[in-house]
Image 1 (cartoon, rainbow, N blue to C red):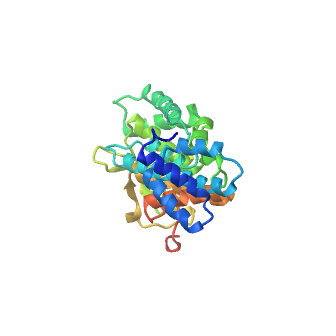
Image 2: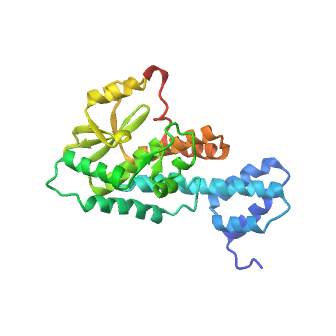
Image 3: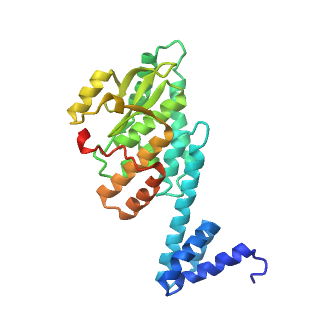
Length: 296
């Protein structure tokens, strides 16, 4: 009996039944209409679980589910970006949900807040900026024991947000992002500085003037701009000083998506690569981790 169904629900049911139509030209129209109606994904998954014996229908339904999920995450990312003070971890989680829709944000946030509480217990207002950063570094690197794994972004596990928090190990990109997230939450005067090829934390004063730079890959070593230029040149990177700019949490979430795209390519995960390529459109055309030849 379908008398109790609304007009919208009846249309969704009719459209789903068309997914096994042998005429391929009908399917794009059906998919677009389903996306506009936004059926509940769990309902579609229930239909999928009850279906059997029709591989073409299952394939097409899978595509609809994937497109709806991507549309939902994109909308959530845009809503998060419009918040007054969007939290970095939430942005990373939304990007990560593109791959793992059931990833639990509250569990990950609890892990981060436990690290923040460790910092708060010893942080006092009378400490200088250098002392605060030294204290944070001691807790993050030594007491908690966070470390870098997979420097060439060639493995999946160190790129996965929940696994990195659980294991206290992450690839360089995610490692730097988590260092920033805990610092932001703890109220430390640390911001993210962007440059072609990556990002790094900097400590600022109350007027956002840079006091010093932080090398998270050497236990939070503190250094100045000249040392930074030398450090990058050691890696064959020569970048004009004006290309170093502050960035917000939205840009950092985009960098995480970009890193997952690179990991997917390195491990040969085509599905993951396609999902990240699609998601990256939300963050614009510029890519941070890719260094142009004239900047090398």
